[in-house]
Image (cartoon, rainbow, N blue to C red; front, side):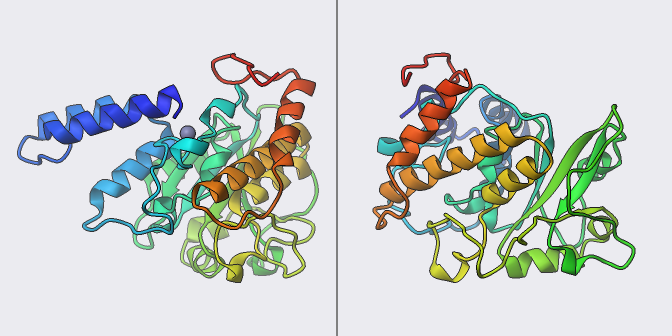
Length: 296
Ligand SMILES: [Zn+2]
């Protein structure tokens, strides 16, 4: 296991054992425990942790017996944390997750945060909207675009199919709905703040049966659909951030390959993805987090 993952796990276990994060009798201690843990988590992990604390029963995902790295959710033996690079794309991403999606260790939306510092995950709710999300969508320094198939656009919605030209003081903010396709359509329909945004659509759609998804972590029913990280990679490339899009694509392959090995799935894809990823890092002079570059 990587050092960060190990440290987070030990710290979390310590607070659980000491009762600081399960004891609701003392709000101060509870908040202290949460704050300490939060210091070592990224935004996605914090949201995941918060959601776990609200659960009344454990989430039994496939491979529930696997001893996972706290950080990357791959098994400890196949942890990919040391392969993360010190890199951020220019664009921002808002990830709006279905309530169940954040609990799935196979979730790939989290990978977007590994190549994007401006990464803002939220859990979707039909009845209320996080004020922080609305604040982001109204921030003039961002140009928010919902990544969604154009056939679902409302009559008044702008549809973007090519690289958009922004004002010099604006950056693109891509909004991704991280859910099953059925849930994503419902989330779109039930969220008026989404139906007002411009829609950016990928050339071949995001749910076509001919679509070439390399996502092999879940059942065959959705294998025709692109994984969230794949969609993010494609939209980055479409909007001019080709290096970022390619890096995310390669990182997704590494996660997918290692994840399959960790849950003993029949591996789809190729071990070559690890070599391709390392080669890309070297070619573009990128550094691994911690600057070890031991794979050079
Ligand atoms: Zn890890």
